[in-house]
Length: 142
Length: 142
Image 1: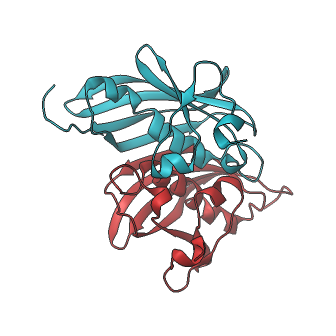
Image 2: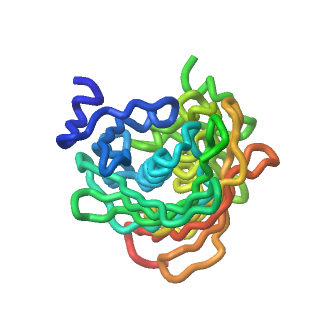
């Protein structure tokens, strides 16, 4: 059974293959919610700490990549870089849990976007915080 | 050639095998500096973003696990959990760079420790920030 099928994502989620680090910590999945990509993953053996709960490093890495996705709708087709990431850890999630991220842009100054985000498992918030991302374009303009 | 030997760590660093997520994002290495474990890794293909630089998610995950190490000298033999992690991204590092973390405890309130930390490649700071960790003991006491 492949890593992807073993993760058995909820209905509506499709595999979101990435390169490099995003591939390493995957498989990640995505679905569109109001035109914005929302990401999820199933907590597997490679995601846990010594207490068999999802590792804090996995949660912050997932937040870093998932919380920036709303920038895509603003035309940042060459991606974005994280400027600042602030995360508060609320609760752990066990091996096998399905974990999702959501975020929303709450401020903008030119190419700099401030985002507020969450990582949750069902109704349980695991991580909350905010981030500043700098967007990049292949061609300047809005 | 194994993942570990391919990483060719600087003199003094030894493999620091971990479980779960720490194994997934490795190989990580450690050396003792003033009795505190300092961690490092060589930026490999699995650590990069689409720009062939170390992924921000890898930097924050590495910071999360490495910055807590000074708690070990306070007898927290059952590990620690991250309560808050705040990171500022200063510069990228390319594929092949050797990356290290350092941190110091700057505050304590019972089992809660505030740590200031850095992730750097040579003289170049990549990431700076702070964290709050809660330590756990197998047996209570100091």
